[in-house]
Image (cartoon, rainbow, N blue to C red; front, top):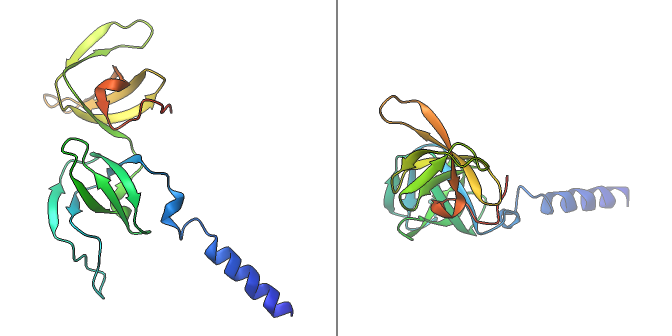
Length: 169
């Protein structure tokens, strides 16, 4: 009787562990890649764990935003490239919670949300990282190609791909 109870508790803990169920992560959500990542046509693997899905695209840019549309399992997610709307499968361990974004169009960037002094004009498809966001603006960090330094600007969230309008962090 004593052992039955212990086995019952162990099975309950094992099958209720959030690490085992990919469904515990909300969808849709935005994620980014930690490193180079392959966008695959399928998520099946062979006996050795080698992916069988052909590579549709390889993304070289770190922190590129993808919108997860479905959790497949603990290793794979179905995701959408927000610029092309192309659906593919991504290997979950290479994904990051760092919030990357891309400008939708040419946009004015401000020093802060209150003062709204224009300090830059960002081109369409500028890639960067969202550091924080309020109800209207996101603090957007970009690397300037000329000098390799990073700059931070406040940009309206509705001009960025990689963040939902209701999100604040």
